[in-house]
Image 1: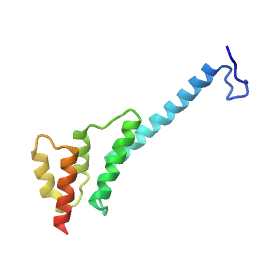
Image 2: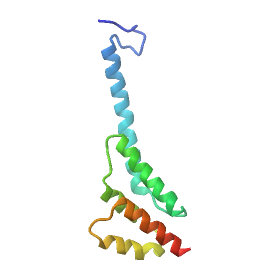
Image 3: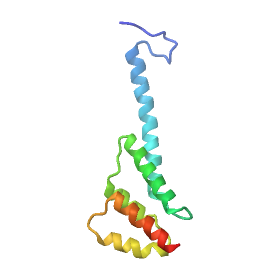
Image 4: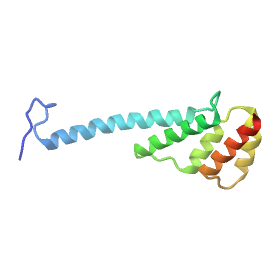
Length: 119
């Protein structure tokens, strides 16, 4: 079996090095998942344009998927609606919450149209 120099991260074989890398990635991945989940729950529209808010939420959801912890569409829709902290969005939030299922595309279309009507 081919051996790596011992000075390379203290690993003697390529398997040892691979195992060390998997462990290191696993620790970073867990920390990233915790961070992303926290961001996902804390995100609010605030002063963002609706398009910016939707992109930010989708980016967090996509990054969670890349870590192996995907967010299903129902959770994404629910969290986006929960992050609409302005009273002016209550009518559309109530309308969407009454539906049994709202797709990501329908949510985006409805919220972007509603924002245009507000202006």
